[in-house]
Image (cartoon, rainbow, N blue to C red):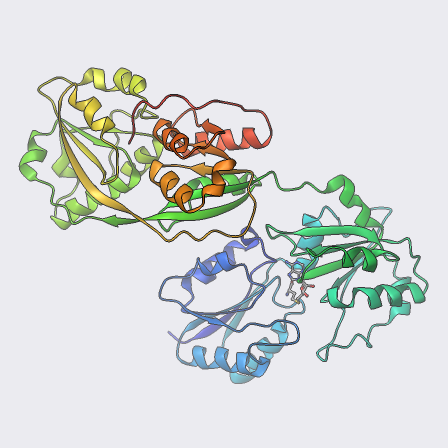
Length: 495
Ligand code: SAH
């Protein structure tokens, strides 16, 4: 297939603001050429084979000159690659996207444009500022505060000051004072409301609301107003005080494995700032499922998604499939496991929602008989509590199909309202390397995780009523709204 270029607007910073079409383009990219303003999470959507080329672009010191960027796009496309040129915000709003498009046209390279949400719209929106509002602003004008040479001389302040609509300045933070001077000299009322929006739509977005007479002085006292930033001038800026809704909370989610955690996904959807820290990596073990043992098995029990993945991978490696399990009854813990199992076309007989031995005995252990054989599939680090509970009722074999190996812990420099743990190993690894987190409120998925938190001296522990991500997300939402105050239950059993 011949090469082509997709000029893609990646949105202003919040990765959730990428378009569906943009996500599809990133998935099929063989090369991605990206800028500084692009949300790093977007690169995670590309395949592992995709070549990533950073071309920088920072005011004053461009990492790669525009001509060089154009040359890279043309060269990679000529090699037959699908090249995604990923830019911050929208492609054609001050991003020199038009120049890139012209260069591609001239070189005869096929290209496509996928617009993005520009910061000039999303920034004010996330700051609670509608750029138009009946009675306040009948329109808006987006202007750059500097040309290619870095000069502002081209700005016609008379015309800008006479515009009764909203003004949005881009690339203007370093010129804030002279911009406001220009507007005042041209007759704009110094009391005109204005806003500075720094790192709009990102987790560390900051907003300053002031007037054009005072904003320069006020901004000097705020170290957190950093680039990229927008300057909004006009009466609509004041609506911030009524319409701005700050993030619903900041949560640190400890996760095992490379994938974005299901919990983090849910929390982000609910409007929370969520950081993830990876505490472990899953390594599947080269196990052999003993066919003879399988023939004798009455019940198969899975306690985690990874257990199911590892078990079926082992079956496949032995050229077996789900028919090898015909006649065996299956118990899984939690609906996440049930969903994973359904990918294999199998519905479990029993789905207790937690490891709590009361529920287990009601729902399942009571059905076991001494002559029953149970095959318990787990990770190597799982505690032996469930094994012991089953062994009290039936014969139990334990098959470990994966290892949860410690990962190097990399923590962003931030403050969180609470930390969420979905397994005891994460507690141990994270709190050992970051003991200061023990002072925060911690949410545990179940009793074993709560017990681990107690061992590390965490005083404020809240346990999800069921061992499920949905239940955890619900508890976290309630906590951040100040509604819940559960105490952790006693440790009864573990996965
Ligand atoms: N194509 C981009 C704009 C690129 S020019 C878009 O449509 O958003 C770079 C300028 O955009 C910055 O100087 C700043 O004024 C603005 N900008 C981009 N992302 C921003 C963000 N997250 N917060 C505030 N301003 C941003």
